[in-house]
Image (tube, rainbow, N blue to C red; front, side, top):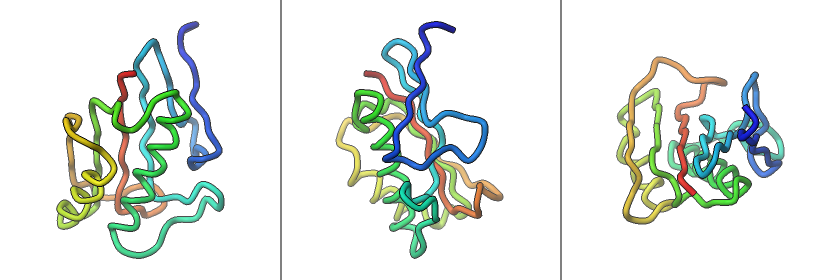
Length: 127
């Protein structure tokens, strides 16, 4: 597909599998799921879910900026949590990183995530 552009940045964690950090087609950007990896070290953030979610949203922001946009260009966010008990804390982090009108969103509990992460978030942007 010739109109597809790969989005890559050193400011977000490098892919840990056969995928791109993001793909841009036209004015739409699909950002791969981000877990709380620190880009410089590829180590997981340790601490509470707030620290982990903050790192995830910073990673998403970095990919959005590399695509020529910003996180507020998100039209859809998908959140996976290993414990829906973290729902309120993650909502607070998301609200701190985005402004109204907020994007559409799904939030689901899953059995497990890569690297034993407790949260993974992916986004679709409209630039």
